Amino acid sequence: MIEIKNIAFGYRSKQILRNISFDMDEGHCIAVLGVNGAGKSTLIKCLNRINPVTAGAVMIENSNILRVQLNEAAKKIAYVAQKNEASRLTVYDAVLLGRKPYIKWDAAKKDREIVCRVIQQLGLQDYQMRFLDELSGGELQKVIVARALAQQPKLLLLDEPTSALDPKNQYEMLSLVQQIARQHRIAVVIVIHDINLALRYCDRFLFMKDAEIFSYGGIETMTAKRIEAVYHMPVAIEEYRGIKVMIPHPDQFLSPSAAV
Image 1 (cartoon, helix red, strand yellow):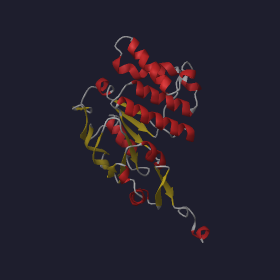
Image 2 (spheres, one colour):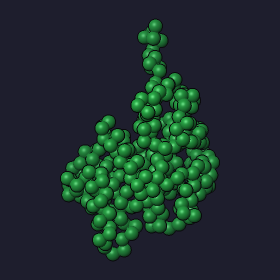
Image 3 (cartoon, one colour):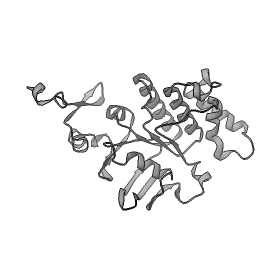
Image 4 (tube, one colour):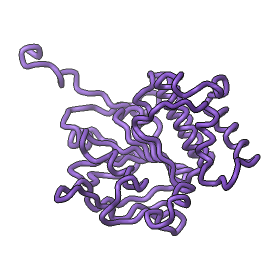
């Protein structure tokens, strides 16, 4: 189990996060949900030490990752940002960078085997020698996720990983992340806006509101009442072929005159 304990963060006198505590099981995908500005991306940047917390701990294998050397932390946590810059690296070399925490002088046979396996898992083998700045936004996002998986982390942090993908690739990406998480016992935290994608591929759901955790739990917590309280919009939760889906009220975005 991975434990997040009492994380707090702020800028000067403004508190962005207060008393954020939750735990995660290996192999589970956790969706972080909430309106824009709720602190979702800030939270995973705190977990990854990009934002220095003012209080709290991230416990992985009985070690507080916020207090160990960065190279050791990189062996436990991998992070995929919302936006990533393309460069003149090849896809293969970019994924190989994920092995950097483990490489002393040169990449070993094991490092290259891991890179080849991840490239194959994400379907990147046909353009592994292409340069990153020749890729589409969706292709680049897949490469960045592949690089994070090459780190073989215990905790994978994804900040809106499907934002640059078309619907087909969104489902393929999260399905693959879910499979890899379960197969390799990786806990995955996903900041995501698409509630239906979260319902389909995540095991637990963390709602953020007003700099705090509004609720956290399994599929039983994904109720219309809770979603309405967080997003301020009426919805229904229905089931289609055994999968829960969220449906906004059809008149939610009509003007008063149009509704009449």
